Length: 316
Length: 158
Image 1: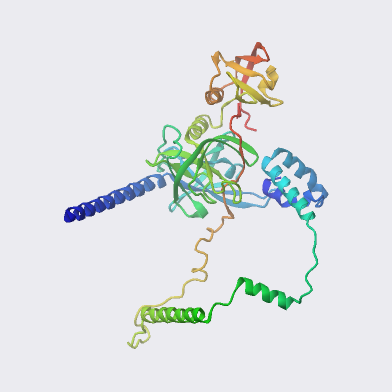
Image 2: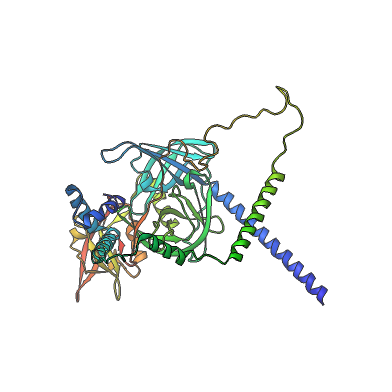
């Protein structure tokens, strides 16, 4: 009996070692797959009245086989010169456009040899594995592994509001803006955007733009050469019963011109009921040209129908 | 103004000091940025707390007596046996490290080398052993924006 127990424990230990070796092998294979689509972006900014000239390095993810690269927008907007690096290769890059609502920018290099990232179909789940691969401190292909600790975060970064951010527990470092966040299968689920500073509650937590918004912004920019998305010029929150309650109206936006005010509840938009704030956001964003639509809103006890001209987002 | 620039001025602003030209910009930024507004409140609270601290007279005993009492409180002299054991342990560890280093170091070859024989030893370039993570030439900063605030859920922009 004792010999049997010893044999079983040795076999179990051996099986555990095999499992660990397989796990490590799988992980290394995933890292190699993700690294093939991660590049370094170097942006040079000229001197301005309020700032010195400087050169900034960050990360990017190859989006198309034709040479489009997605990265974090504030690191490359207004750059005078852009260079993309992968291994020993270097390319001059052209800034195509950025979507200031999502924080995604698209660059273009003239090369047919880059490997585009494989995208996940949807956002990751809370608690799932997150692998961040970037160029922390200029060291190419640096990787960190952690977990997705939250979804749907709203952030204030560089004076702008961003929505739907993925919160990660994987450590990221300067240079990782625009890095690839992948799931355990090596699929692209997010683009690193920002980090909580030291000393803040939850410091070290990182945030990424979810792949749905990266895909939406990057595909539109690649197709049109600029960001095109619908815009109403208002903010709203889910109403207590149905619809979206308007919390803020921009002074020179389409909602203001149509007569929509704070406190109004948008019940239907373009013939469909507004039941879900996320779905409503996509419905507005998907417009590719200006269009007049009918909006039914609830104001106090009365219902009113208005015509609103959905416009193309001015990207202010 | 960016948040990092405003934060450097908050302490002066809270005390009514600083450059007069900066005050409108600081005020405008704090009115919009929840993170900096919170930090300004904290600076003001700290200033208020410090200003309420009073002073007390120092005992008349001379400083030597005071420091002697402090030293005895925080660094009590151990019993003589404990000190002897501690010394002996340090001596053994030191001898062990020294012996290990003696055997690990490569021995000088007894072979006589003449000019032109053996491998050429070239000096490493200056600075090669320092700063392994030095930034590549031409890069001033590695980019990663900082979150100024995590906002409450619910509201969306359309």
